[in-house]
Length: 202
Image 1 (cartoon, rainbow, N blue to C red):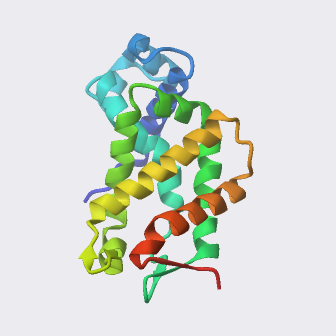
Image 2: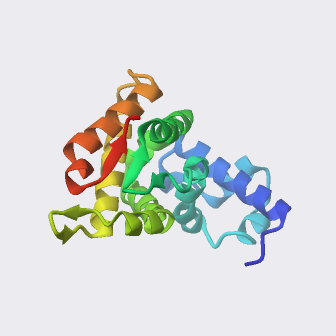
């Protein structure tokens, strides 16, 4: 696949950044293409050379907002025998909490607003694509019954988003590192652990 020109990437980033900032100030319904272009310091024709309309930006903005998170998730975190090292997992999840905290207002709007389903769908799709190989190798089971990967992914994403929402809504009362440990313990004790999924504390 041909890579986008650096100037195109920077222009799109400016548009996304402008849109995110505007969602913190105005209702989505009142944000116009002119508002976005003006905030991004571009003209309307430049905007339309990259996006069809405001909805097109909205459809893609969550991928932009999630990009720092996605970039911090490491590959090959699962070892032989369905084992994930707890310390390594904590480091990855802590990064996610810290990067979400940097865009706290945006994520609160995303989680509470009418666009929360878009965020959930985008994140689930990423998880399914990014971790398809990992979950296929895990072959998570309940006894002899293989648990569908999409169910496991849905469980993990829902748990993560609910935890993050509580954390942000309550003004981040616990450090990101502690939140990561708590979430991992909850998942390992109440969820995947009973399905032969092991988080090693060694």
